[in-house]
Length: 186
Ligand SMILES: [Fe+2]
Ligand SMILES: [Fe+2]
Figure 1 (cartoon, rainbow, N blue to C red):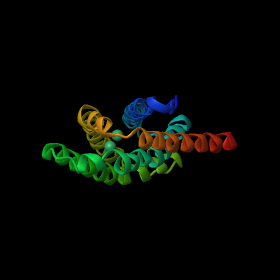
Figure 2 (cartoon, rainbow, N blue to C red):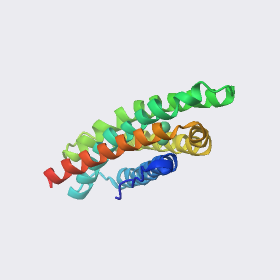
Figure 3 (cartoon, protein in one colour):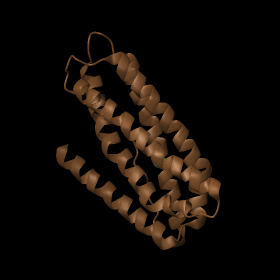
Figure 4 (cartoon, rainbow, N blue to C red):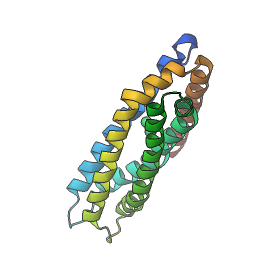
C-alpha cells in the first residue's frame, strides 16, 4: 500500500500536511475494510497462512501507525481548536479526543486476538472479534468524517506554516525510519 507522499516545501506546507493527514485516513479506511474482510472470512477450520500474515500486518500497522496518527492530532491539530472562541468547535474537538480513547479501548480488545490468529492459536472467539471489529469500524468512520468535515478545515485555517512544516518533517522522518526497518527485515 502506498505511503503518504510529502511536499514539505515552503508555502505548500499546510496544504501538504493536510493532504498527508487525509492520506492517512484513506489508509485507515482501506485497512479497516481488509480487517472486516479478514474476520468475515474466518471459519472454524482456523486461519490460512495468508490470513495469519494479514492479521500480523494489521496488528502491527494499527498498533503503531494509527496510534501515532492520533498522537499527531492531539499534539499538533487539536490544541488550537480547543482554545477556540467557538464553543461548538471546542466541544466537537473534545469529542474527537474522547473518540481516540474509545478507539484505543476497542483496539486493545482486537489486537491480541489478531496476534493470536497470526500465531495460529486455536482459542479465538470469532463472533466476539467480529463484534469488536464492527464497533471499531463504526467509531473510526464517524470519527474520520467529523475530522475531515470540521476539525481539519478549522485547524488548517489556524495552522502556522512553520508548525505544519515541522510536523511534516516529523512524519517524513518516521516514514523513512519505518522503510529502513522494513528493508532490514526483507
Ligand atoms: Fe483522530
Ligand atoms: Fe485522524
